[in-house]
Amino acid sequence: MRFILTIAFIFFMPVLIHARVLVVTAFPYIADITRIVGGDGVEVHSLASGTSHPHYVNANGAAARAIGKADLLIVNGAGLEDEWLEGMLKGSKNAAIQPGKDGHLDLSELVDLIAEGQTTLRRTPQFTHNGVNPHHHLDPANIPVYADAIAARLQRLDESNAGLYRANARSFVGEWKRRMKQWDSRLSDRKGSTVIQRHALFDYFLRRYDIVCAGSLEPAPGVSPTLQQANIILSETPADRTALIIRDVFNTATAANHLAARTGIKLVVLPHDVGSVPEAVDIFALFDEIVRRLAE
Ligand SMILES: [Zn+2]
Image 1 (cartoon, rainbow, N blue to C red):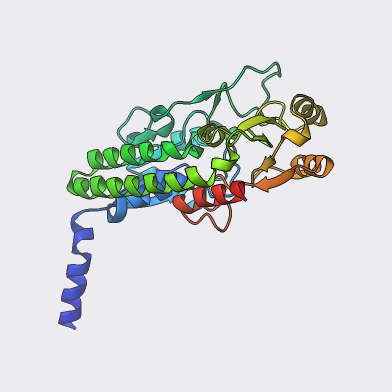
Image 2 (cartoon, rainbow, N blue to C red):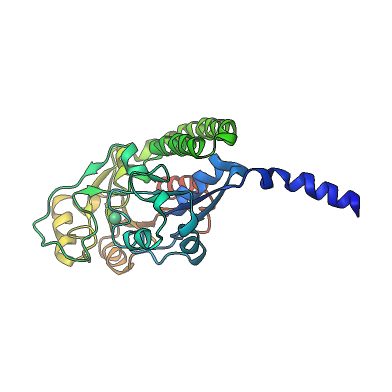
């Protein structure tokens, strides 16, 4: 018995000496990068799930409870959480994770953002992109930038594990860059092809791989697709010059399915976050699956 207790004490001792950094993230992709970089130094909860509509998230209960005592909150930023996180953040009464504090990290401040043209449509509660496309995490070249920033922030909050975070980030970024070479070569045949999207979700990904987006079925981001909008896109880019229609997992499927049936253009459903389809079990598998479905 004493032997077992001694073993148990040695096993749990590091946890007793160094409490884990409690991290709450807005989205599963951020949680996955943070778990890889943070290793045993962190405990991570994501507010959104992979199938949540990213503009309108019903927060996961465990994550919502953790936000009050979190050491670090990591958000996607660029307006993606505007409709659902602000009230939770204020309600948390957690001074350490408010914007401007070391406990708050906004990933959109680290990367180049795609500005979206002004629309003539009146802003409605459904209008979800406010002059900038917030879905920057779908450019795979941005992922190492987040990993390095998350590692740097963890080092600042938890110096005792600084070496661990640095080493984990270095090996993650190395592996990520190897995978990017595979994705580049798998998508080389898609270069210069044209696609139509349901929502302006994959702009960063398409830009990275020189795939042209003829337009989105939504007249403005977040506004329901219209037949008129589909006709405008097809008048500018005929169906026989369009390789794919891209649909996401969280919006209604009707408009994209209807256009595919009407035109014969191939429809592909693409995952956008870890857990959004069964294959996307982690951040590597997410991009593997996007590439596989696009390359097919
Ligand atoms: Zn959006």
